[in-house]
Length: 392
Image (cartoon, rainbow, N blue to C red):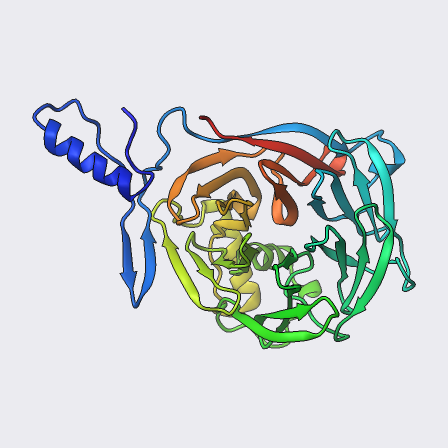
């Protein structure tokens, strides 16, 4: 028997079915997800039981990969910065060393290269993000000078858009999102807060949007220089300091979490809280190996700095609004597993990813096609393209 858990209508059918047929004990328990309203905000309270029935779980199947050992020159990536999937299914790969974007057909065949290092028209300097506007034009953002380079659907240079110079960004690789009004979301960071800014396609600021404060990490000792710390302290600070995670949804909403707990908050582009998603199935303590690293680091730092087990490594939102929460393994090594939440925030279950794709800004999706960066043999950079399969 299928669990009735897909909508309010389905819940009503379940209730009627139970009232009519509760005399026997052959009816299995129904998984439910309470949704409360607190101060006008929906709070989704997920329990430890996934909503997917047997045979309903999604899977992610690799279709092909680019890069690795003994590959053509076009697939030799010096440092992957991100990937994108264009309107026609083409794959766009940003590379750090060559400061370019390489374009591949849906079957993986190399097509052309966009950009290249420099400050001139059509050239790129530390590209970090890509996005397509409503005219099927590709926008590529530089990391530090606030400059956008725009290419048309055939890959020809269109224009350069200059915004405020010297901006700081909260993470090196981030997505771009365009609305239907000719504006897009940019972001900067100051005072340990990520600030989102709405800009028009001339680069002018239209208004400020959401502000996401960084997690409280406790008292950080003064005068500590990271490069001079013992290895245990470096490992601990890199692995167990709480981090801010965020992802943009297809409607421009901002999904936010902190790395030490599976609690998601959806905000509007203006920063209003739309819903809160709570879970009870991912809390954990330090493993003995992790605790030994943490204890050694605290002795070296002589500080009460707040170190916590890292549960999440990234958030990613599919084009239909489903949210993927990429889970960490021990010592904050990204696992190959993601928790899947429906657009309402209900936990459906977990799905394995091929090659432990990096969803932290290094991935893209269009329909059920998804592509992302991963590590290949001999620690080479590879791009994996996969398809999400949904039974039924």
